[in-house]
Length: 91
Figure 1 (cartoon, one colour):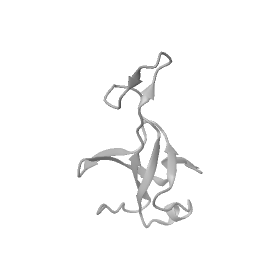
Figure 2 (tube, helix red, strand yellow):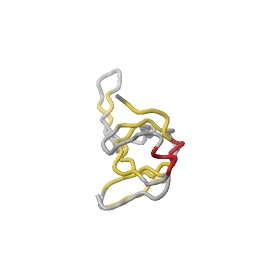
Figure 3 (spheres, one colour):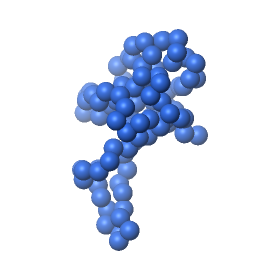
Figure 4 (cartoon, helix red, strand yellow):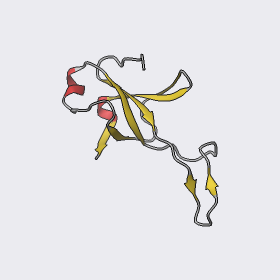
């Protein structure tokens, strides 16, 4: 990955998974449904506030459904988040 977030921003790759309905029908990612609010940290900026979070690349984080800026880079759907848009780290 050659994108480097600036300042107090984090680059996240939203995690997607197929969803199965109660009746057993598999809904692929192409079906319009709510965006997932979990992603993998792909890059971290050098800002002072972001360092306080203690995140490292590869961490899984939760964020608000409509947080951040969506970008497409080399066929990947990515999201830039500000440090205060990260709600939790998934352990």
